[in-house]
Length: 348
Ligand SMILES: *Cc1c(COP(=O)(O)O)cnc(C)c1O
Image (cartoon, rainbow, N blue to C red; front, side, top):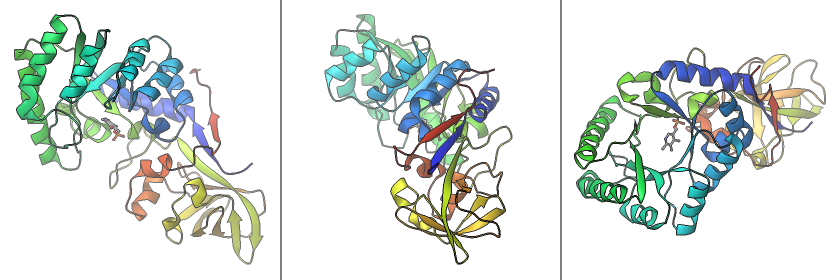
């Protein structure tokens, strides 16, 4: 068996249960953008829905439609990037998606489509990526309230995205968000859900949970860079490769930079083997070299990252050695790399 990503659905379920328990009574929106952080969108979404998750977050409308097909008619699917054409908005309506709307032009597009879509209005509280600036927020929510009153949209949510890199910056962002919620209420809107926190703030800052938290990383067992391991949370994915040659104290394994493994990892980390951790000597294009061990044989499997059962590091620990984040190692993996699922999609 060539290199593959092994995905433990029981671990995913356990992580989701930990997330839900931690943030309750807030609800959990499970983020499945980037092909479910490289884990494979359909199986992951279906597994989470069978485990009782009711909110899903996809980046764009097309993947939101894939989520809808995977989870069925129940549940809510939130797609938050700006669609640039009316046709996409109509398809979002057909799939019964909730749309994130963070600019005026997009609001007009959604109003203009002859369907009363559910929308979550986004205020920019400092990230300056997307979202309506506070100085334009009043006019924006007044326009949305008018469109809601005439039956063109349904405003069901208010939201923002925060950096989660400093408590002080997050506090400032939250103060802007609280003010924006007040302004929206004064304009006549009564949205059911407010949401701003992703994984880190959802766990560390109870006051940021509001009605709903949008959790990606922690559900996959990807901890924050520099952050602690969390009880009840562990890596869902293990990247394994096969030994294809053993020569002169080195074993060659069949995974390389073409599979998405960063070559910068060579010489800096260990991988897990049947004999415990061994140095990853170098990462080539299609294969990599590891320091061998006494009984290394062609056909053995090594674990490049995973939960640590064989001495391997987590994806986040590998990422830290090359100054990136854990999800980067997963989302960069070649889409064609086989994904193998362990455990039933429907809980036992
Ligand atoms: C990616 C993303 C999240 C999830 O962030 P994690 O840190 O992975 O939990 C939440 N909200 C938005 C808007 C995102 O883009």
